[in-house]
Image 1 (cartoon, rainbow, N blue to C red):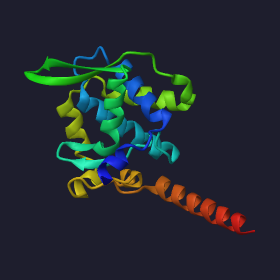
Image 2 (image 1 turned 90 degrees about the horizontal axis):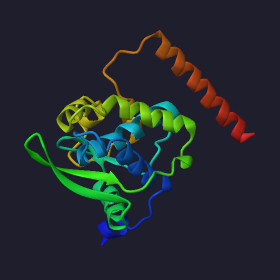
Image 3 (image 1 turned 180 degrees about the horizontal axis):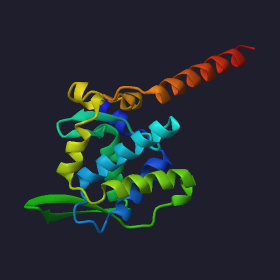
Length: 192
């Protein structure tokens, strides 16, 4: 019952439109299938969080064997409802000797729901991954420290994508000091 109840929560319009947008933009790519859709969502939300402090969708991501994926209890009902409503079409195609589930947008995405900065970010991520196959993208996501240290099916909080194995430099320390001062100032102003 708990699993079903979670899946019935409505998704944000941005989540739905981003799935349609990705499916529309990548539909002609032979490597585009369900894996690349999930990885695109994860990377877009992660980059958005890193740049703005917020993901674009209301999805969460978990550790799976082949890298982070949208949490199936939320993502699959959304994707499947888009197929049921005719907004997405699921087709099975042969790709590199395997059957690939491809999701094709059957309507134009409502891009006015996104800011110009969000569209730029989304397109930038899609351009960087659009020519990679599922294995290449999965291997790339295996480098995320959050994924490496998480337990199987453990949720990967967005702040965990800030983890890096790169040593901080002077610029990082200055950014941290500035951020701490801004945070302290905001707390002081809020209490006044």
